[in-house]
Length: 477
Ligand code: P53
Image 1 (cartoon, helix red, strand yellow):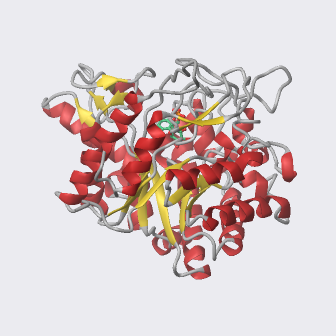
Image 2: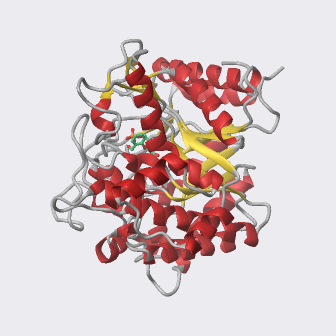
């Protein structure tokens, strides 16, 4: 007997900007992803002032899914996917973000893509904004620091909801909206909110205001979506990284709780339609989020989500440095320490399968909504053998261990889980580093970090393994 419900949504997840390429085709505008250069392992991507000559922008061509989607979706069907999570590139629909009319060629592309999926019985699961804000909105309005951008996002959402209302049932508004709790990180601020900092601005203040506008935009979109099609299931999407205390020192336990609050208020607002008390107190004390209206509060209440989508890659561990106070200025990223009990990946990401069970329990206890694991996986270097085969037991080991914990959460802990879509199940451009060589896929794509390669697709050993997992509804791991 399978531990998972019969209609469990086994799938795979990607995002438009990381696989489509065709950055100037079909009338597409420039997005914030198009101005990010390739970094490397341990080397940050550069965010340039527009597209500059002589720089390597890996998202421009990516794996050229824009032209390969038919053969790719055929492979996804062979893999046995029940659902396919991707995003709609905002700039294919509204090239500048503030255009008067949507771009028909862009809308047509997703019609064709969704039809291709549905032909094989693959359910599209769609993120509206996955790190792809039109660059014009960044330049003109400084992204979500301007209230006007709420309307531009809602219009984009509305156009998509109306156009695809009979093809797409599962939606998410903003990908990993809580990443910006790391407000010192340029990449996360640009990809979440379109915020690019030039001098000594108060980043934390800017984040709380921009995130507020995003949450209002999300809530308005959710409300509208439910009006357009009452059968829609519209979720939020958070990067769930449990923050463990390094040890049982009371200050560290309190620190872990405090940093969880500073990270998960985004989903609190999405789910409950109100700010949690601790954040309300904090923003008032600090003078953040000055612009919040009564209409905003009503909008938040009226647009709560149907489910909680989340990515899980790892836990993190935190400790309060000597002499610091829990009520002082806490810069979350500076409080992260190594967890002596877990190993790390080649990119130094901790590997903690139990953390996934912890996450499912925590989210279930806090929100009492269906959950959807929409990203999980291991970025790794793969080696192509002389006969073309790719042996990736490390990938299978990572995923197997996580699926086991997921099944315990459902079977033993009663978590209501909708599905599981491993990240980057076809190799694509890494968001964090811009590398091709940080691979997550069951499907290998022949392309290297300098952009060379035939783009040929081939199956890794893990392809057959995941095929069997889906076929047996997670029994045969
Ligand atoms: P890459 C940071 C921390 C955790 C997840 O990440 C993150 C990021 C941003 O890099 O992003 C999510 O490609 C995101 C995907 C991304 C994936 O995790 O850096 O939703 O777009 O590709 C994996 O290894």
